[in-house]
Image (cartoon, rainbow, N blue to C red; front, side, top):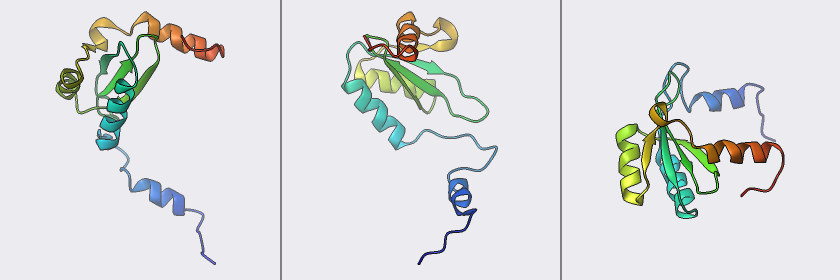
Length: 115
């Protein structure tokens, strides 16, 4: 029999990051972005600025508005990612999110099929 303390899961969770530290982008984030972009067409990247708790993030938006978000090392890292994949990169603070992304999210909320 293995004893499991009531606070064990909290202790394990705390190892990932300390309170007050910025969550950094990692290889899993980059792998997800690569795989996601490779499986869709018409993908564009929208860089979101760093916050107090999260490193900069990038939102990839496909032609139909489907999207995903992951941490990235910053605007320069996003531009390098976009260059490698031939994906245009925009700053959300300057251009906002594309209409198709908002429409996709609304369709999902209503339970309608994507596209």
